[in-house]
Image (cartoon, rainbow, N blue to C red):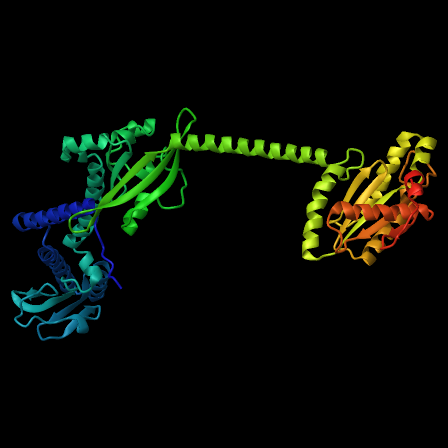
Length: 515
C-alpha cells in the first residue's frame, strides 16, 4: 500500500520557516540580554528572604519563651507558602524542639553544612554562641513532571509564540499570495497566444485558485471580466451552481491525475439568455511529474445548441406533418376501400384483396370458403317502408355479419343488399357452421336492429362454396357461391346451401325470381 505523504502548502511552509526564524532570534537575544528571568536565581533570592524573615520571627518567639505561638507560626508558614515542605527548630545538641510538616522525611541535611535551594539552615545565636538552627525544607526548583516543565517561563513563551505566530504568519502570507500576479512571470508572447484562442482558458493552482485566464474566458460572463487572479474558480457563482454536490471537473482532474473531457455546463447571462459550454480539464505537472495545477478550457457551443434545437423542432414538425399525412392517407384509404353506407369493404377493394389471398391459399394447399348472401324480398322492404328503411336494413345486416366473423375474415358489400364473405382456413363443415349461425342471428337481430321501425322482420339467404383443385381464380369461387345462393332462394329462402358438384337450378328462376 502506498504510504500517505503529508504535504504543506506554500503558505504553510513559508509560515513555518518564519516562525522558526523568530524562535531562533528570541533564543539568541535571551542568551545575550537575559530577557527571560533565571528561575533558579529568582527562587534563591525569594527563599533567602523568606528564610531570614522566619529566622527573625523564630528568634523573637524563642527569647520570649512562647513555644505554643512558635509552633502555630511554623504551621501557618507551611500552610501559607506552598514552596515550603516542612519547618523545624533544632538545638545545637540535635534535639528537635518544634516542627511543622513531615520534617523527618523531607529534611536532607547539607553534607558540608552550607544551605542549598531545597534545604536551608539558618543559625540561631544566644550571647554570641550557636544555640541552634531553623531548618527549612523547600520543594525542588527543577521541574519534576510535564506540568512543571510547562509552567517554566521559557516553555510558556514558546507555547504561545509558536502556534499563534505560525497561524498569524500563515493567514497573512496566504492572503498576500492571492494578490501576487503570476502573469508577471509569463512572457507577453505566451499571454498573447492564450488570448488568441477561441476557447476560454483558465489556469488554476492545486487549491483551485485562478492563476491565469485568457480573453475568451473573460468574455464568458460580465463578472468574469473582473480581476479574478488568486480567487477560487469554484467560488464564481456565475460559473458554478450553488450547492453543487459533485466535485468540479478540475478538482477531479487533479485528484485522479487524468483529463476530464466533455463536461456540459450552462451559464445564465444577465439578459436572461443561457450560454452552453463544454468544459475540459487537464492536470499540469512539472518535469518531475509533480502536480502543479490544472488547465481548464471552455468551448462555447451555444450556437450549435441553438442549431440543434431548431433542427429538432423542424424534425418534430416534420414528424407531425408526416403523421398527419399518414393519418389522412389512412382515412383516404378507408374512404377508397370502404362502403360509405356499411363500412364494409367495397367491391373494388374486396376484389383487390381477395385475388392475392386466393392465390396464396391455393399455393399453400389451405382451405378457403366463400359465402354469398342477400336480404330476402328486399324490394318488398323498399316498396313497403321506403328506401330509408331499406338502407337501415342493409346497415343492420352488415353489423350482424361483422360481429359474427373472425378477425381474418373478409366482408364486402358486393352490390345493393348483397354481401360476399371470404373465410380463410375454414373447411366446408366450419363454413356451414359459421354461415348457419350468421343466418340465425340475422333472423333474430337484424330486423329489431332497425330502431326507427318497430316490428320489422326479414331474413337472409346464403350460398357457400369451398376451394377445390379445379378452381383457378377467385371469380370462379364467388360464382359457385352465387349459384348456391340462388339454390337457397329457389328452395324457400332463409336457408344455407353448400355448392356441390351437380347442383342444378332453374336459370330462369335465378335471373327473375331469386331476389
